[in-house]
Length: 495
Figure 1 (cartoon, one colour):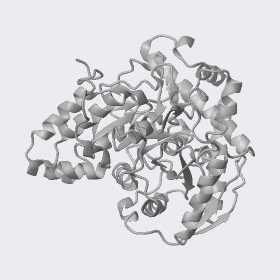
Figure 2 (cartoon, rainbow, N blue to C red):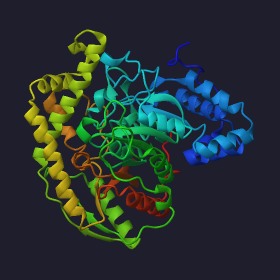
Figure 3 (spheres, one colour):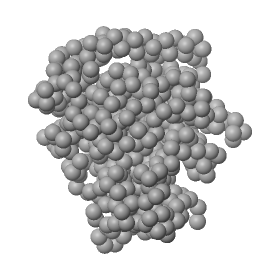
Figure 4 (cartoon, rainbow, N blue to C red):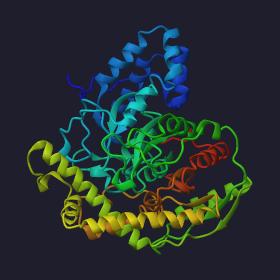
């Protein structure tokens, strides 16, 4: 049996360990440490839910056998020995999933959501995987993503449609839609995610979860690259609770060999232990492209503004003036060039040229465009990002945070943002996905989606807070305060 095969069938009766679904990662780890359940029992609870809730289609690759071997070894330890190990690995035995994009785990495949990479076996662990393992997490699967993470939904020819647990006809968002769907469906309490234009915050918003994109350089991207997409991409997690996000960031932050830029690591668990000071919050309601913002998204952000004001924070309308059209054009150059670089490396490894039928149509189009980009265009694009960062630095010198919608529209129906459609049709819908999120990928600032609102149809709609570079502690402190004032972790879809 290989590492990607299923090792247990979908259960016919009630799912095991019903209390599993109420635990966040910290609570689950505490029960394992105290002997209330074993790592093997926790893993089997997760596997049972993956099998029973397969209609969500959140899992791309299954590494069940590898994880079971690790869980069995831990479960055979005595409680005292396991507790001593947990002192160094605070999330010991907690089942965990990686995103099937831009991360490597030795001996397993990462497909990037693309048929051309369907057999791409990693020969190393990413630095982040090393840190997840050091934290005690038991990695047992990889979650779905659109091909190369190039859209705000999670649909691919390779793995099909990932469905939003709140409404199976709607998108779970992207590109970390598999991670968000897995957490919302209670398959796992927290899952790895990445964000190159909103790909943590958009699915967190659509699925009623907490999602923080860290500052550029805070979480390692290596060892083979130091900056994903020339700094656009960042990695972290999607979670149900703020404290899980804070702990995972605390355990994984900081430089690796080769790091040259990035903020200083902070004591993030301390930050969520007390309310933040009185914050000055700028409120942005206008779509940066000048197009309308859906009423539900405006309701969400105005509700959040009132809640912040009721907690003693100062909220006022203020708009940073950015060269949005130039920024997004530059983003297109960099993401396409980055994709082409990845494809060329795979071509070299395979000793053959990629074929058009191995890619989604819109990505094949981007690859052909990328072949015509010049070094000058890429250099200018990075300078555009740096100037956007400077503009937002100056703006955030006057405010502690910037509050905005996450997206300009609620979760779309499946198919609306597929990469398998005419470009002109795609752009019309995609324009609503990331006008608020992507600016902070280009600038490198941290930003988070907080689940504070559900619309009349019962669909979650998050709100975004962005902070000065390196100010994750401020974001997490406010998120913890909002979580206490308007709890969301027990809100769940019916599956």
